[in-house]
Image (cartoon, rainbow, N blue to C red):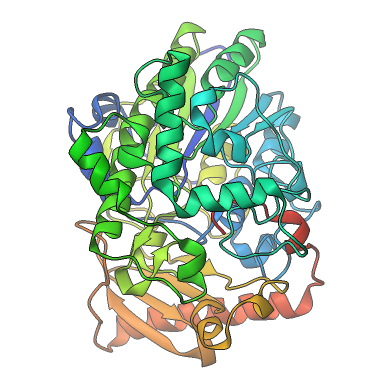
Length: 509
């Protein structure tokens, strides 16, 4: 195994550690760090940060759900695992997943996802014994507080229901038309949830939660497992995903709500180049995004409390992270998907190590989601997992500071290209790879062009300053070119293994 910081290790226990990975979908690192450091904004997360290793230089391997989750589960970059638009947005069956490895190692495994992409149709749930996932009903009609997940098939009538890219051919279904209208006019959607919650007599803030069945089903699953059997659970929470409710569904005053009612969120219009958010539109989505952390705070607390009730928390490796961030017109990009800009690639990453005294920020090295399965494997007695460059997050803070990490965006799927106007297509349909090392970031893109930037682990995320050419900066630029060439070669050599039309339902793509 790699050398491990002596202060990091498991407490004496009768078995291997439990593993729980929680993904806060779409959460960017700067907003999360600011909120989680405040006991007022997020009291539980503020207390939890005193128990974890925090990585301020964490990078998502991709700009959207499927490739990033695939990297989280396989320890591979998108060009190696193949679950991205250019190769087909499903995980091939011959790629080993963390769930499969831990299942063979005796773990009970379960996946509870508010994001409908983590399901059998995409291959992302492979290796989990129990798999539960949400659909559009849970996302849009939160006041119903469904006790059971809807588990829609992504190849069914829900395809492209959010309407970012039309995707599905033929006339839209009534369901599709209703959901597209709600996503374009969030005040109507918000009002339905608030009124519905009052009529049902639901508790305060219930309109904020997507897939409210996750916490009770997680606790019930824990209760069914023998205490002698370690568990591996994956949880996806999606409140930070666009489009947004007023105050992320939490209580707001009349004045704030009226400001929200005058706003529009039309991601399909933005994708087609027909709409740009105005100042009030942007202010409202930023506010909804930031306030979603209060919901994450409550939900993470309930997950931890369930682990405590069942006597598992002390021996649990707990990972709190995101699959990608979210942009609000930085570099003219809205939300995510099409760029490897800082607000999209930079994510929070917290790791609580059972029995360890190591805690606090470790900002001296760049880390990636591909390091998570490598970290888990190291605690279960396996030296490697996934990419040969993956490193355990439990290594000392200065280990691996000379390593580069990468993020890839894959543009449009084959069945989407023709639906986008030509001029807009040139902006959206790019294969780009970002490389991070030291104080530099390089983005290699169309025609093998390279842009160099100076980056750090602190402060708000926007468009970083351009970096001058020099030996160190140029070396990072070459790394990004090498990764881009590798990605392009792998894409060219692999058969297209998925159908975007059949596989992509909508959480905003």
